[in-house]
Image 1 (cartoon, helix red, strand yellow):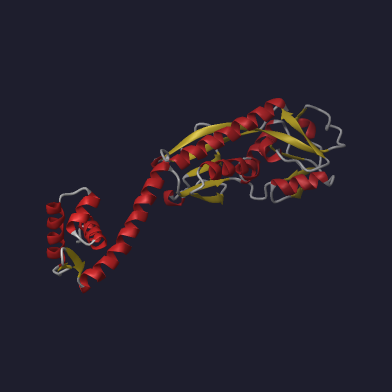
Image 2: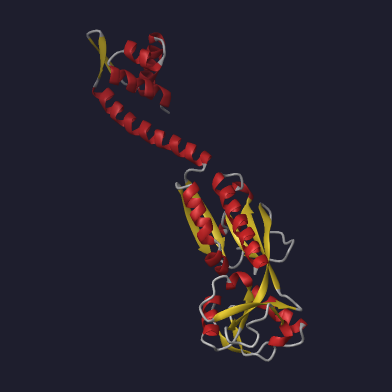
Amino acid sequence: MLDVHRLRIFRSVVASGSVQAAAANLGYTPSAISQHLAALQRETGLTLLARAGRGLRPTAAGHALAAEADRVLARLGEAESLIADLRSGRTGTLSIAYFASVGAAWMPHVVRRLTTDLPGVRLDLELREHIPDNREERADVQVVVAPTGFHPGSGFTAHHLLDDPYVAVLPAGHRFAGRAEVDLVDLADERWVDNDFARGWCRSNLIEACTAAGFSPAFRVEAHDYPTALAFVGAGIGLTVLPALGAAQLPAGVTRVRVVRPTPTRSIHLVVHDAVAHTPAVRAAVTALHEAARTELSAEAGT
């Protein structure tokens, strides 16, 4: 295998035209330069340089190797720059998975922060409701809904972000619209809009709370997601109950009211791949997501 260091010395000799000039440029002695040239010619089995007066000129083989060395050294320089960028967090890829309501409420802040602070990092964003069983399919960072104290599996660490209480979203003219809070049981006879056709954990959590309050909600309309359900509420079709984060951006003509006795709550966690937890990009993403969670908590406290 060719010695890259010797290739660099060889290119310097070709560019400068003499051993003495190359030695001065590189900070070596002429003897050291000559030794590296002799070793390179032994490695290749080629005569690469010929005398030309007081200097040296490349042979035909030397010209060909010099041209190839330029390409090799250029690619090596690019690789070295890439490594330096990766160490400093200036480039590379960061994968982030998140669920829908986080996408609308938090991800614009997170993405803006990352693209501003680390413009060389490519973001691979994915909408995902569950943590994949296959470790290879998991993102570097994932925002998930899970029970408090859950274990994300070996090689991953979970960080609690916040507990997200549910709220009732009502048409602005509804009889409960002016209240600060409403007992869940008081909504029992209302016309309900379902907001989770997939029957996920967040919906199951709501059903369990309603059961604890002594009723089963009468879903009259099924929507596929929170924004559609909110639009149905705005059209006066009924009310919907969902986590506060899903009601962060309400359409005109609707309002939200805290649900109490009981208050369904979902826990939001951040799952980080331990192998990349130390990288600048992951650290920046974790910081940005904690900031988004604190902002959400502050907004809820002021509601």
